[in-house]
Length: 395
Image 1 (spheres, rainbow, N blue to C red):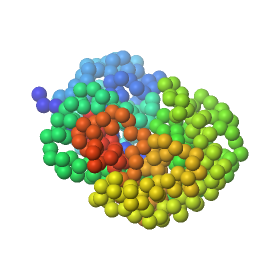
Image 2 (image 1 turned 30 degrees about the vertical axis):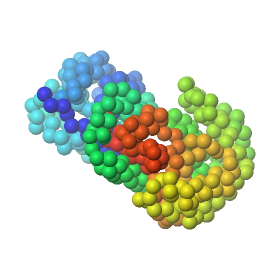
Image 3 (image 1 turned 90 degrees about the vertical axis):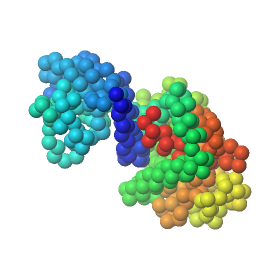
Image 4 (image 1 turned 90 degrees about the horizontal axis):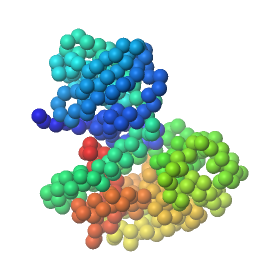
């Protein structure tokens, strides 16, 4: 029996656009990684999950032999998982008798506007459960973790075989195209943010989010909204940390990534460069950032990008933030914001920039796939293209 085609969708999340495979949603359902107390369907029925079912990777419903309790009545049957309620109709399930035993329709998002009820070919009306507000963590983090986990396990060999089977230029072109897509996603998010708030607050909020990284972005963002840039300078890192007590994700965190340490770095930046957001705008117009997209990264860095990077670290950020998190701040926050604010074409500078917080698993994969290595340093563009490829692959 043939395996299903894996669907992907670009989702505008709280922190930007992310490509998510439908398989990620299926794993969330399979593992029960959502709050299951006091569940109600979109139709208002009380729902209890006894068995989530057996995952079916072939044609037909996503999960077989599920057991649910709906308003106290036990239901046994299949479960189908989608991004949107309307996908039931777009995928033709309402005409397919293989879906007649549907007991539950599970979706990430609520319906867009008025949505007609889901119906099977046999005239059955399965209820819909929306997961968006019940996820244990944000979808981008889940998708990224799943992609890395897959790459660490058996899928790495399969992905390498696919990559190495193709000519090198084709492999490089594919990752360039996907890096371009990541850049457009980040620039679109920066544009939306600058439509919602002033430059100073956009810089303040986005910098703190990046310093929080994936696990602590939400409490960092909350602090940025509570205390604008000028007001935050009046507090200590300890006071800010305690202000969000109980909301930090600290288990398994490496000491350099502890939020109190990151808050201390940001406060050092504000002390050294209280006008860093204005310095940043001037830095964004430097000639060293106007680099050719098709030149080798090593050459571009020697001819001006390395000097621009040094100026960003010292003149703009006052030497307060270093290491890979500095480069992550540049590529995930500062360059996209600057491109929108100044109108400058900064894609090539973003592509050739240093990779930042690239997981070792991805770094190893890119080297084994001969994307990076002698003559091609591990530039941000290759890392971003690799991320996008993984997220689109449905691994």
